[in-house]
Image (tube, rainbow, N blue to C red; front, side, top):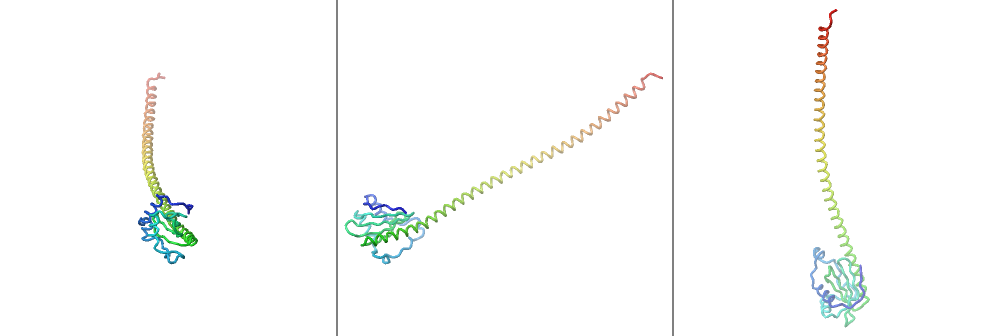
Length: 216
């Protein structure tokens, strides 16, 4: 929660707050259907109800001074004082929209209310921050899930390609082995035939050599 020291409203800040007072609720507050529950002004010591229109008028007349302002996430709390009277306002903002104003005639009570509402705004913001963190974590997990699914699909594709290639290689090896066995059988058959032919040749050569030799 960050605070700003007391300062006089500049023209653009006064106009900005005046417009904020007229702005409708939006975002998380509108989606929920209502602002966070608050105690009625009658339950806040020294606070007067129905002060929103009065503060808008003072903002329009530039007759109000900012004393303190704090922001917690989408929520803000500001303490203002009228220029021409000891009148103090504690205003609540959500997403920069002014939505509630409490009026005080006593600074100490206004300061106490400002401190309490600032803490309450911080609590509200803490809940929204936690929701934002959870949403961010969910989105990160979803991205990781999608990345893991894509990685798994890629690995499955690689596995299918590898298995197909292995099957093709295995078929090629089996075919080569079958061809090698057939070639070996054929080689042995030729070798047997060759050996037989060579024996026949030697036998005939021996017979011819005996026929033409000298007589005893």
